Length: 168
Image (cartoon, rainbow, N blue to C red):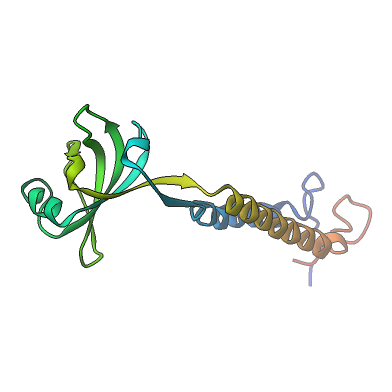
């Protein structure tokens, strides 16, 4: 079998570390996204640009049928405004139905009256879980890179032109 020598300017692990890094980043994104969760707050505590989940009262569900449609239990979205009447104006609403199904809400911002809200939750970053997840990802990535580098250490001889080539 013929032996071919790789380009001497390219380390033997260059082609294997990059895909490993891409996989590590791809794996990290969903893990870090899982570090956000909804936490109960008072309606007074939410401000514009907060991401919220509003649980509707039974009466609120009936009142908002013309605006949201039937069977809506939760409204999730970004607070656009807090009018003086205590309502919460939500933009980019995602609706969660009584059966758990999800559907997009109206395109225009929706004003949810204060009396229609049974519970208010704000989306927050869980710092402890984020640190733990980030540490696990960094540790896993480091392990993969070290394993790849160790696995190519001996096979890489010859890429500088000083030894035999690597069979390919």
